[in-house]
Length: 565
Image 1 (cartoon, helix red, strand yellow):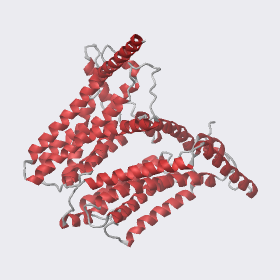
Image 2 (cartoon, rainbow, N blue to C red):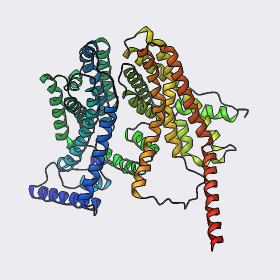
Image 3 (tube, rainbow, N blue to C red):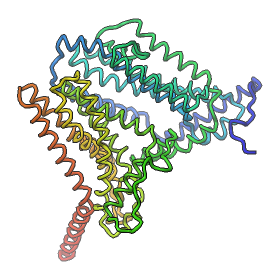
Image 4 (cartoon, rainbow, N blue to C red):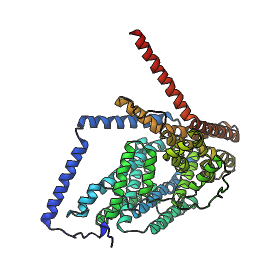
């Protein structure tokens, strides 16, 4: 009979002397491991890195924010924000809730190193004492990330809404930290209580649907108090602290139930997280996505929802074969991924509508969302890049093959463009004059946003023309700069198409034709997307010509040196 790690006998209360000795040994072990990990890192160098990241990052955010000259909202708009914002922001807390409850049911949110799972968890050390530190670190990092994001968005909101920038940044940080901590707290509770996945999904979707109804029909929602925290830069309601208290209580109960943590889940996640950290270090975004799906236990269907007819006579062209293969890959997406993609498309519609209403920085959020949607929908292209040997064996240029893999995902974006258009239309108040511009820009905006995902996937494709022993000796300063460019460049590509929404906004303010401006923006987005497709087609040829030119220059320089001697 097979057993699991959770079936291993664990004494409920080890002797006091043994427990204190084991706990002291665990502290010494972690202290020594930390010293070995840090190595000879000087404290001054560490502080200098923090100074560079904080000063450069914070200064860049403030500089970009101050360079955007959006006008303060009118009194009527301010009153509308005050009425609807708690429910809308509460929807973010509802999303954190469903992510937490599903993540806990799938084994999260903790992920230890393999040595801790094998040795520490099966030692006489109390499991609560052993897991308290990593759980606290997880809770702290999530709250800090949420606070940082909330502070950035808050100081942007403070430039258009009543209140000071400092107050809005503090209020946004409080909201972000609460939502981030809520996610981890709910995940800890869901995991400790062994909530089945189907129950977690039903409860999470019910909470999101209830909060969405609060947004649409102005009924009280379960997360309105969480959303109201986001307005503390404007006004403060002491009753909103109930949301903070609920989060703290949930986190405390989740930490108290750490003894119920599944060792099987820790063992599975430890191996995946180790690979995930290595992939992040190597900037391998494709591997990061695959590992995240494995952590969430998100498996594709064995059979597609609909199977396209097969070509038994062998008369199908290569394009038709790639088309069929691409659609079969897309039709194997699990329901959870389709729902996530629809939510991202709806969020893109909302952010574009916010740009129309006067919030210019929202188009950057649209670019990031479009980039993420592109990484999801371009799965057929990713699969071809992952299997480079098979692509090289086909009697066709690799660029030509990759372009053909863009056809099925581009068509698959059509229903998601309808979702984005509907979300934008409702955000603009269901105004009849907004219907035509929204319908014109929806699909081109999604295609342009997905173009950034295409660039990210293609740039990680191996270059067959580069020699295996070719190494670039780059100074550390330049290496960091080039790494930053590699990360930001795909998002810049997405932003180049999502910013076309500024054209109809300008036409609306100047009394010009909004439909005509929308058509120009759509044409510009489609032309830029076509340019990205052409780059995919000729990328290998360009690299080959550039490398031949550089080799020719090296040969000429070598000849000149030889003749000079």
